[in-house]
Image 1 (cartoon, rainbow, N blue to C red):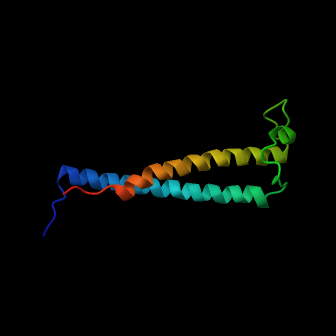
Image 2 (cartoon, rainbow, N blue to C red):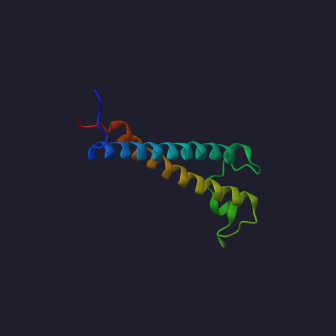
Image 3 (tube, rainbow, N blue to C red):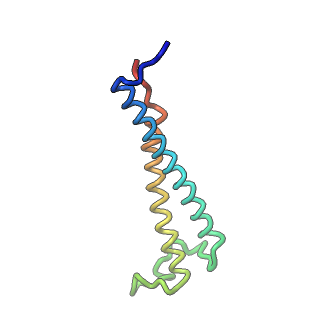
Length: 107
C-alpha cells in the first residue's frame, strides 16, 4: 500500500516531528554541555570555590558588581550564568521532547 505524502496534515505532522526533534536534540546537547562546564568550574578550575558558591559578597565584594579583575569572582559569575542557562536549556528540552514522543499521526 502506497501512502500519500501530499496530504496537508501529513506534511504538517512530518514538519512538527522534525522541528521538535531538532530542537529537543539541540537543547539536550546544550544541557549536557552546561552540566559538563559546571562540573569543570566547580572542581577543576583554579582558584577553587567549592564551599563558597553562595557567598557572593565575600568573594566579589558588595561595593562594585563589575569587579572581574578577581579570578575567583570571574569563576563565580561564570558558574551563576551556567546555572541559569543550563536550567533554561533543561526546561526547553522538556518542553520540546515531551510532544516529540507523544505526538501521534491521526489516521
